[in-house]
Length: 287
Image (cartoon, rainbow, N blue to C red):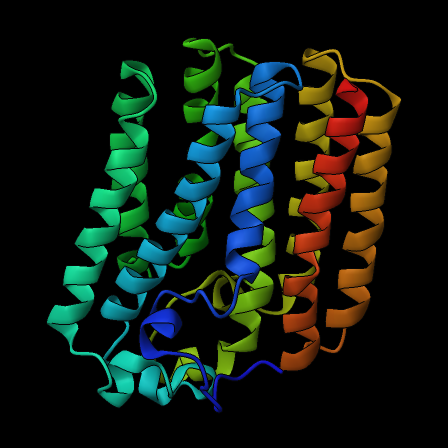
């Protein structure tokens, strides 16, 4: 089901999208990739807890500021017409209070790390806060989302190593192109409504070449992750994980081949499995 027409959860949980954890999973898996690469398979318990909670908090904050930015257009989109800021269940100023409250909580978490991680967190905050507004000024807002998603990589290396080896940027770039790919599937669900209300997206930019470009982005993600694997000396299990991810990419294309909203949403959700199999391959490889 791709719509949000039957809201049943608490209004605040819905605003933070805590009743729909797919976005949390999509951020959690690359966070774990980064932590496992940075720590050679043995992240500290403290960093594991801090980054896991940070994913939940920052994803919730991103959803709140996204809905605040889109509050005047979400009502015209079938999938989002029942969101709390559209229906009036939550006032815009209340959403902003929640957003800044979540940022304070994220700050408390990052203060438990080290000075290098704290400094890098400023860049992550700027990326996360600006992404929702990119849809007004660029046809590729997914690039901003990808950068926000990928910023966890240098932060994880800073937290675990207090240094940024050049090879981490392979992981960083892989997360960006993977995010553009899966969020384009998501944008394809709303493409017709977005055209009506003037929202920009990669699905509109790519047009009839959408599936081809997604495939190229997915190949690029696999190539970059392979380069990361070689750079960090990974073995068979890691590359088996990448092979399983490639199989899931094929499944996604079969689901979205007709470009029907339901199939595109199914392809988007399947990326949870992509992130998971890559992480499992990485974790097993370090064992």
